[in-house]
Length: 397
Image (cartoon, rainbow, N blue to C red; front, side):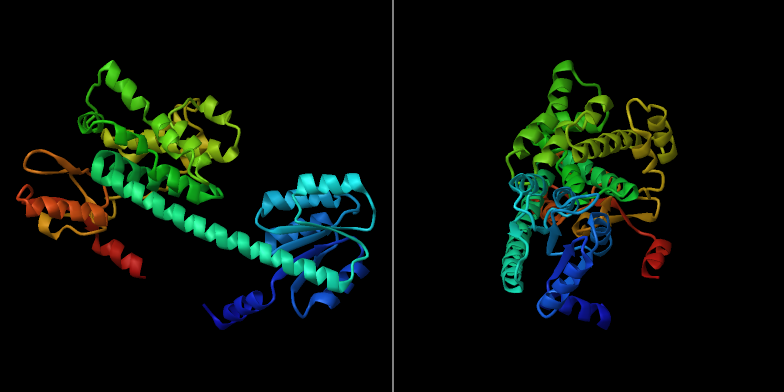
């Protein structure tokens, strides 16, 4: 980071950023004069300008808005602020004793404080300090929760890799497709889609290894086995639905194999997007696993617009397929390490499947492999993917 960025970060930490919105310029000028020593204060002459500044200059710790403004009033503005940047603390200022307006502002904008004008600089500073404390409290709690959530997901996926390597291998590939599509489409909250991808096969933990291997090998299934396999998204949903902040992820997973029309009828847009990302990725992966090349797989998906949204399918067009920029080499199982990509299934002498083709080795998987080697149940060579000389050079340039 350069010196300018360091200074900006230091200044932001020393003076929390606050945005004031009012249609009266002299009010904004007075506020800036009163607060400049303690707060980095930006101003906007109305709701439209305020929303534009939020989109261009966010994040702000606090947004303070006047209630009575022409065009967009304070209640509508703060409601939009909540939708745009929900973590920002919102405060309403008004010069009118309007109880109904105050109630609407609280209900629509979910404000933290409501102040009557004229408000003294001292009272405003005390209020802003309380808002900053609230903002920091929310962010600290959110950081702890997100770290805990990330750790939980890592443990769950690592457990899946050990108990069901087929399911974990599928989930690893699906995550690559989902992450690429979400970035290509400019979707927000990509972390939710990545978690949904990694946990999309969680329900498979309740299925027997022989059933999953049969699915992996595209073998015909009995009606009973097909029903059991098709039920895994609902099982994954039930396992996740009560975990904080994973409600939408659970819904995405439950709907991953549903018809497109049903997915588009989901109540939340994030669930619609997540379920479609999973649905397209799963179908794409099945076609690749069956031997189709990328352009063939995309052509087949594109030819079924009622089953797959063309917008999501086209987002895979520039996806680099693992193996296209790698060279394959055979190494001794003793030399397997984290990050290697398996180019064939890895089985013990007794035929137990440890890692599936296409899976990236994790620390837990490598340790499990080592335990089988120590017991004399695994030996010999296996083919893995390593970056080619050209791609490695490109990565360094």
